[in-house]
Amino acid sequence: MGVLEHVAGPLGSLTATTPTPVLAVAGFFSLVVLAVVLNVLSQVLLKKRNEPPMVFHWFPWIGSTVTYGMDPYKFFFANKKKHGDVFTFVLLGRKMTVCLDTKGNNFILNGKVKDLNAEEIYNPLTGPVFGRDVVYDCPNAKLMEQKKFVKFGLTSEALRSYVELITHEVQDFVKRHKAFKGQKGTFNVPNVMAELTIYTASRSLQGEEVRNMFDSRFAALFHDLDLGFSPLNFQLSWFPLPHNRKRDNAHNAMVQIYSEIVRKRRAGEVKRGNSQDMVWHLMECTYKDGTPVPDHEIAGIMIALLMAGQHSSASTISWVILRLATKPEIVEELLAEQKRVLGEDLPPFTNEDLTKLSLHAQVVKETLRLHSPIHSIMRKVKQPLVVEGTNYIIPTSHTLMSSPGVSARMDEHFPNPSVWDPHRWDALNFEDDDEKVDYGFGIISKGGKSPYLPFGAGRHRCVGEQFAYVQLQTILAEFIREFKIRNPGGSTDIVDTDYTSLFTKPLSPAVVEWERRGAEL
Ligand code: HEM
Image (cartoon, rainbow, N blue to C red):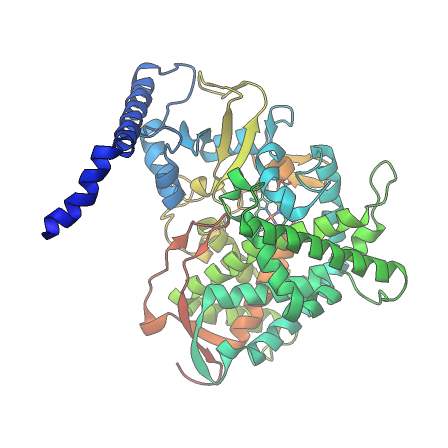
């Protein structure tokens, strides 16, 4: 028997005796073609005049998922050019209506609670990670109270103590970490900075017990819990996949750890001393109706703070280091600022000192303009909504999507927007004339006209901004005291962004060269 007969033999017998598989494949392809044709026809023929334009797509359900997912900003700008600031696209079967620029940001972020809803979108994903009765697993009014607890826990006394604790963590880290052995070397920025960020956050905000557990048990639990933030979980968070099982086990273990910390503290087995961590503060908080925060909610809020803070801060400080490595002259300017403000001998600094290090703050601010860790913010439409200045009415079957990162990259607001230039903020401020509002967690700027909203706006605005700035500025100030940094070969290139996880971050590996001060690069 020849080779061809060998191959044809089995196929021949298959078609002769079982025609079904071939027919099934042909049938499947016909169905796909039919679905594509109907989908295209419906986009061309059934345009609704009072709904925003739909981004053209061939396949139903998949829609624009791939182009959006590969580079959301490229996708937003391309469609803004084609359709204007308001358009709809299909993301995994959902109709997402995007509203861009300052008006779009304001429309979505400052929307009323009766019109827009965050918890229906986010809770399937965050619920199993954070736990019961916290954040999106409770009515919005309760979330506002929980945010108030956190915001009011970040007192100036607490922040002062955090600066000291974070400073010690950084000093210890740069002495001991394997990436910083010797006088000079290279390090993979995203990995090393993620490690440093979590040590600093856990020692300050989370408290001594959590920090002490980090090197052993806690890091593994954090890793497993984090698996729950896989984008796949927007659809399948309930499905017993291995990563979801690990997530659930990690969540239960973490709740037990926090509950045990609270129990020991309440029993007086651990004394407070000068400790200002958030667990102590939450143990003293009560809801408006007089109910103290139950232990499982303390655990849930602490987990939420850990997860929300870790990804955003680790990504931001990594971008700070990577951007500085492209402009080593700014590193020297930062050091000069510290010497000018604090003294030539670079003494330890306080939270009040940080507010005087304006270039340090501007480095963080400019980095967040171009590298905001959250590129898309979503809300479910609860009743048909008119978009001001248009004839569009957004139906309740749509989800709204805001991307403040778009206005932050528009040349109408920021000349040469793609250039990373901390000095652009020397004389730039969007907050001064802004309307103020209180959604229940303290007075905030409404941000209605600002093109720069990396911490969001409205009732879901970030309550971690102050902590993030303290953490990021302290790490930055300590880091540049210790090291000179630059890109290998003095290159000015910057790595691409990794959009595959929920929070964006630099694509790893992203390596820079370091040298301890006192030696030459
Ligand atoms: C550079 C750092 C950070 C950035 C850029 C950032 C950004 C944001 C943004 C854009 C939102 C609004 C989300 C929405 O409207 O759906 C938000 C909310 C929030 N963030 Fe942050 N964040 C940062 C750090 C932190 C830290 C360190 C914490 C905790 C200590 C934190 C806790 C929260 C909380 C509790 C919310 C409220 C969620 C809600 O009300 O729906 N964030 N953050």
